[in-house]
Length: 157
Image (cartoon, rainbow, N blue to C red; front, side, top):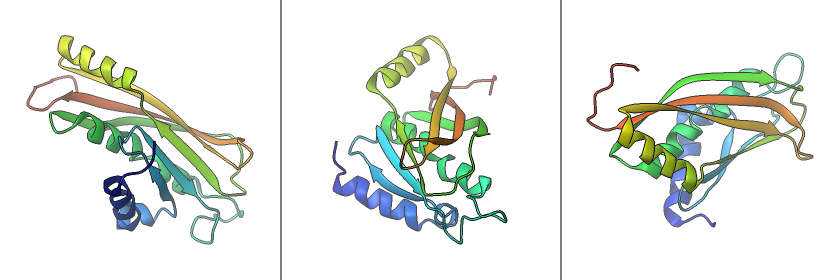
């Protein structure tokens, strides 16, 4: 699905936002429905660590907010979405530009809606990899997101 004018504008704003642009990463694509986002993390003087590979903090910061923002945009203002936990597994040193592709299917959001009819809140786990141009995984991430309906009270946060 192509970018819309609105998501292109969101992408530009995202890339100009100081907290994100300081990571060295760039959002390079946001689908019109926010169900796919692509991020590129180049190996540059800003992202290079002491041993010449991509700094692990830059890797994490590049992927950190994406799933939360996608769900906020997809679910809309009637839902609260927060990052709850995260883990990273470094698999290979980042010696070249790395890319991540985030997707959230309509089946996933249908499941979220169904679960929130039965429970006040839920946690969902999402995975994403940073890969090089050949598709080799350099880092794997797991993000746990907390989701509830806006206005609903949940004592198990």
